[in-house]
Length: 400
Ligand code: BGC
Image 1 (cartoon, rainbow, N blue to C red):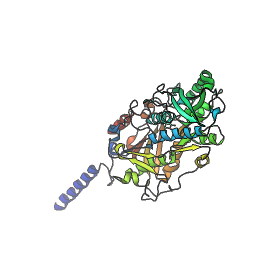
Image 2 (cartoon, rainbow, N blue to C red; image 1 turned 60 degrees about the horizontal axis):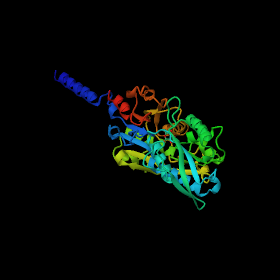
Image 3 (cartoon, rainbow, N blue to C red; image 1 turned 90 degrees about the vertical axis):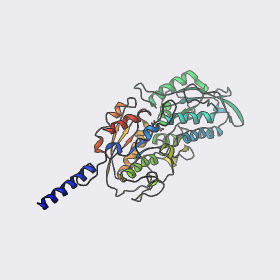
Image 4 (cartoon, helix red, strand yellow; image 1 turned 45 degrees about the vertical axis):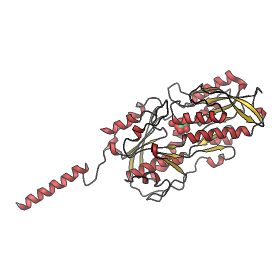
């Protein structure tokens, strides 16, 4: 009898521990709301004010943002344009009216990256007046070959596609076509907040030949276009560093790292498997953001940014495979589909990450949210929202 009581007691204790761990065979099961969550490329923020949505960022202690230094990038783009203008002569002013006229492809007025680039460009050209909205630029000035020119933003446009998607390259082709007709030789410069739209402008059949055009992202086709003398410059936001960091932060979190180990291991120092991103990244504690640095790319250095070179600091690791669900706001976005996603697919297997990627249509959050499912079968999540203020919609799905 004593033996039976002891046996029952042992069973009760064993069962109790299984329940406490929420699983079987001694495996502790993490509930969805406590899993790692990384926002990337689109920082949770207010589309109007740009203020970071810290409520989403503080969802749990495993929530982070991985992106790049947006404000710094705007300044790099502005400087790239000024450096170019410094090499020009009077022929840059095509109609000789003493004014440099430019048109601006804004992208998505509610996106932090877009806002930062508009600001950086306008600050460099002296047309900044405190607002990133279209039509809010003032007259600036710039000195070219010893002569001071007035600078005017002839028009700036968000570039929303007929399907409602933002950063739309076709919209940029249409806009450029209209601008070329409307402004003619008043256009001396074309500036775009991303490469997709810059390349879109160049597609306009009436693109004013020889007018300099600047993009942002250093997509492979844009780099080739610089080599071919069609694009004047772009900015690399170091997509390899960003894609790897998105995965590395998740790796660190699923491995149970905490505190500063989350944003340093494999990033500023080797992780337990010997991997480390080669580029420098900055961690901003107040917004839980890990940011890559930007670099200007032009005719002098474009060969350094040709496609195909990957970070040799990341090698095949022995890390146990973990499953991550990753959303991309728009399958048609040039930067995400031609630069970011290939980088993710390259680095994920090296870091022992089994990625499931779902993509949206760039306009309806539901196009991503409806595929943000089967959440219990994943170890963590990486989210690129359609709208920057939708963080909560994804997080709320983890409650159940
Ligand atoms: C990129 C754009 C892209 C956008 C999407 C930006 O950081 O520069 O090309 O369209 O992200 O969110």
